Length: 274
Ligand SMILES: NC(=O)c1ccc[n+]([C@@H]2O[C@H](COP(=O)([O-])OP(=O)(O)OC[C@H]3O[C@@H](n4cnc5c(N)ncnc54)[C@H](O)[C@@H]3O)[C@@H](O)[C@H]2O)c1
Image: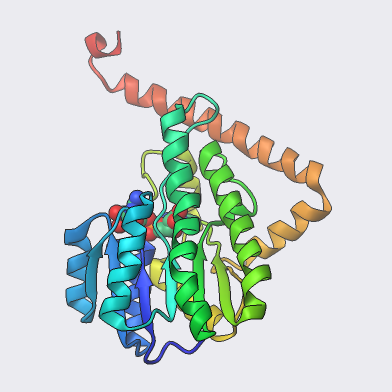
């Protein structure tokens, strides 16, 4: 897809990757960009900067997503590209509470379903349109620091594959963006797993360039970190070894986290430590 003169909706557009995508799409000559976010002030700031439109939407609410699509259609006439980008995480493993699992499931998976359900009918009627599903390398490999993020991003990749199989033959483009670390507010500087990701993190602008190139060449899997393709191939061919390598790395992370915690506690007054 060539982005010139296209109408585009981006969820989670107020910050990070979403904001970089909005700016990059504007530079590529898009006609109208709807910057959507649950943070309306943030979305308005980006919309002002690029001459777009801001619409508030919590993507975990189907009613909100339906309204976003309806208002975008009203404002643009047609949606050429819908970018389902908003995403969240909850650090930890099996101990993470059910409510946090549910919230991640709603934002990282159901939001993609809500968006596809709302946006596909008009695209199918026109016989054209493009969906960009923002998943993560965690959806192809894993995210050691978060079980729920790994699980929900795998589900997001699975849904994107399913959409591609069913809708590409009907004229709808489907792409799935799977970055590893990206230098945004999403990465917590105090978390050892995020510190590890930050070491090889790319900027959101690099991600946006990879997206534009991927959309132009109609690629399904858009990988701003090319090494992710190699890691995925290694996983497919050596599953047990791949698990072993990650288990080894995770043990190092756990030791680092324990050291970091001791250091932090050591810096506190005795009364606070007890
Ligand atoms: N930063 C990374 O290292 C990284 C790596 C791989 C994939 N991703 C994915 O990229 C996407 C964007 O991440 P980012 O790094 O830009 O994060 P970010 O936290 O910088 O920005 C996310 C934006 O989404 C919005 N948002 C969160 N929940 C929402 C909801 N329920 N409804 C509407 N908006 C909501 C936030 O307000 C924020 O503006 C996410 O899906 C994330 O999982 C990020």
